[in-house]
Image (tube, rainbow, N blue to C red; front, side, top):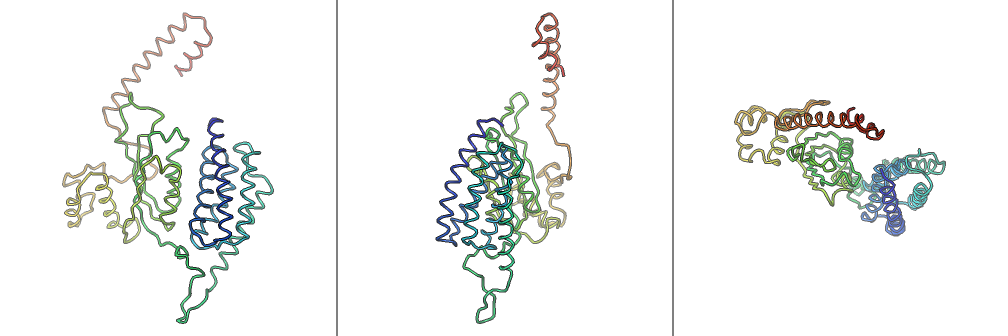
Length: 356
């Protein structure tokens, strides 16, 4: 990671801290304003994610603790109090100090930061304990929520189909798409389908471009806002589509699996909806039926074993790779022969490195 990228991150982080202070001051006057709460959360989320991306591990670790508390505030589990706002303003100042004083990658060791983290955890624990107590009762004896915030009701588990097609230039921003997929995986039961059809022949590949894209089936109780937050850094330049799938059971149930496989195949354009409906009227597994009908190939529906280390590559691409390796060996031999006739230590070192 270059100093240029790190300086760009620090500049963005300082701007976010200014916006964060403004949002917190407004939140003091409007503690139930969900838009302001969302702005505070997104500022913390952005600083945490970008900090980890550009090597500011101490900033990322510290900010993660505050982000976690505000995620619970968004869910209505923790109310906004002046104590919380004051503590967040204090954390804001400490983030600024970490950005100014701490070298990237330094462990989170400042006593003040540790004390602030402990205070956030204590406050979250106390507020969640209080919120778990019986609330005011209505005349019918039903428990009423402590405020009118609809997000106070915990999200029920739901299954989402996510299409993530990153911008080809995503690597140039310092973003690793796999880190986003791992974050989704940590949110619940997750299946990832990688698409490689857009990868060109080897001689045409730009090593700094991203050609792969993914379909993700995620079952989680975090809610759609939490999924959107995963893509907050890349949503402007990438294609991100999130659809809710109606489910009738766990991911392991054959009928539910069949429905999801069918929907994914329709989404990818491998089959038509009419073909899926016809297949569903039979009693075999949907994948087996579709293969028998010649609507898709076996590799389209073949389950991927967890931990597999193999991928399918078209034969023509392997042929091209073999040819290129042969040319490389020839060029390397010519290079070594030419260098042997020249007394130049730098060229000899380069030739030896190419040979290795």
